[in-house]
Image (tube, rainbow, N blue to C red):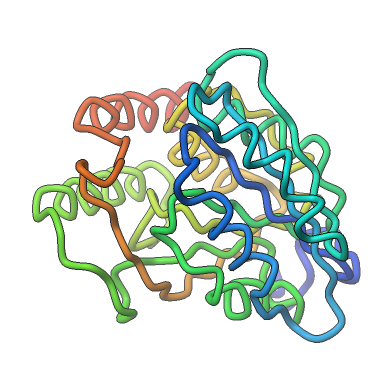
Length: 249
């Protein structure tokens, strides 16, 4: 096969959808959306922001409902899940209504900087990639926090790579960017943090083979005192998810 031959049906990129799953982030969501609104994109691209409230128990819902009036010149769509189901379920809801040619996954907790959108979107906008992953481990600034979290992330990434035959450095990263046509071909099942290994396994198996890129992104991790939610239990579940979708789909 000619490696320069297109392998995924292409469409010209006009619009980017930023999908934000949100759960109990009343302290950060307005600042985060402000950063998303002001983030630079490749020339000529418009943006749509899709916020999915995963049945928050604090004032997150009210904060979200106020956003369209705060940013009247930006297309902002707010959805409220009727029950708490997790990040994966919230993303499925957001992906269904996203109308952009490109979709960015954005967490609501300020650990990742929307200033990185330019380099995340550019490989797709220039028709060099179908999927772009960020990576916290290839040279960009990051907050120094938990040693064992870093070890766990690298072990999970290596284990995932063994099943997918990809050479990613950060499978668990939040920043994943897809052509919408790719997402439309994927049936996602995991409701919670299993989204990360599940989507990785499924895009790795797609045929024709996708062009997957990785770029370094900044990371400003939170401590548990500051609201970090993921725990070692989610790491165990990620191992199970890797095996589940690596072998059985």
